Amino acid sequence: MNNKVIRVKLGDIFKISLDSNPTTGYQWELKFDPNYLQLEDRTYIPSNSKLGGRGREYFSFKSLKNGKPKITMQYKRSWESTEIKKEVFFVEII
Image (cartoon, rainbow, N blue to C red):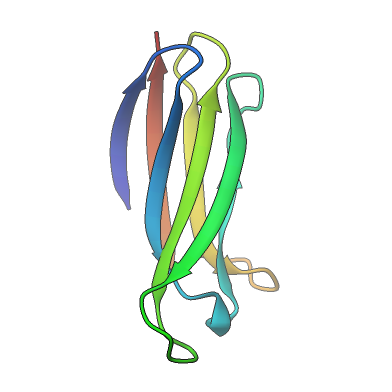
């Protein structure tokens, strides 16, 4: 798990990108406070054209309110309770 700090201004849109491979059944599950952040877009881009290949998933967020919300992202299968990766981002909105 990596803890990262993202500093943005109120109203800014920022992106987070993470390795992903949805063909394996794994996907990023997001948890964040919708009072502070809004998910604007979620896009997966494969790294090549081979079936089952890895790629990157891009998440665009808009900051809505001054504060210090947290984004927790767990890479897991929907039918399993345990993640195989976890990323935590601390957002400072000024």
